[in-house]
Length: 483
Image (cartoon, rainbow, N blue to C red):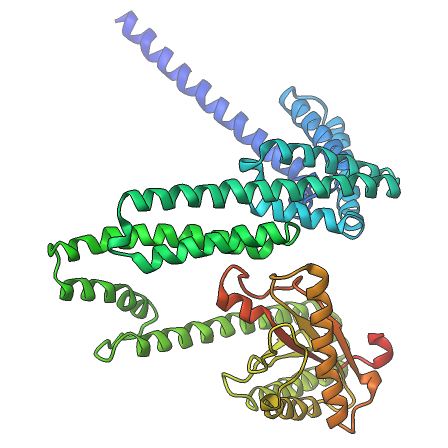
């Protein structure tokens, strides 16, 4: 009897102790969230700015203070001591973010080289070169944080060369060597019996990539894309061979194979609440699906813009409520702006131009305007689209128009920058020659080269979208403000 009592007492004591431990742990979690919350957010902002790479000294200092604060919390040190470390961490993080802005301007070429090497998986496929480049770049970034710009640039130049070498080595290992191995495997497996064209395409792309790398080792965008395509196509050929082998060996009928190939289109159409009618082939459903996706993308963009506008408007409500007259005027102006936007949007067909809002600005992207490869000459067949652009600009009289030129990533950076500037200038000259109501000061031309893609440069369709002209209409900006 006594043993049973003692057992019950022991169980109760254990439950109580566990409950007290849970309460204590919960209280410590709450305390940590209260103390560390703002610093955690500061770390998120610093990480988003890549401060660990571009400002390693300040970021390292912040990490040290943060670890000290965590250690003190674990050892139940004073709140003031913990706060002091967190304040030091926050200060270092602010300095780190400021340093990243300076680094992004001062070390631009090295940063771009690092991004390209990272995209080629150099850390995995050219580990030694990547590690050396990282050490040189970290030293350059720390020198820049210390205010020694010349030394930073010198070390960044060394890092840039190592990054380019690492990128090249990674492309060789990750794409070319791997693709050669896959092609050999495909030949051994007699893939050419079922997918000869796809395999031949892979072999051709591999040869083009090798040739491109030999001829211009410092322009790796095109060979990297060719190498990726080659690797994809040989794997595609191997997949096709596996899929078609049962058909060749008559284990699967041609009809069953054709029906199976239609099912993905039916599933995609069903997801979009459409019916894929394939009695005339896949072209009709494919066009309908594409149109639906493009409409959804445009809706998403406009929704994002509306959300931004609403948030901005809500932040002003309290002050504007004290100035009802001003509020009424602003709402009326915004409604007038929306009506003008719709007016411009209705001027263009779906294959002629896309029209977006950018805050109070209007962006016209004449997707029907195409330049010949390497040329800035506007062909006469595109004058009709540009006449509509002129009509759109006139919806906002006395406005500032910025003509932006953009390219895909193929070709050298400097070449693309020059080409984009020339194309923007061609459109600017055309507008000024045909719009007597526009002055030279009201139309600007800016070339951005390949720096502002709107689509994936690894696909033909994506590169076509990136080779574009954007016209930004700034109705509320005076010329003096823009300049």
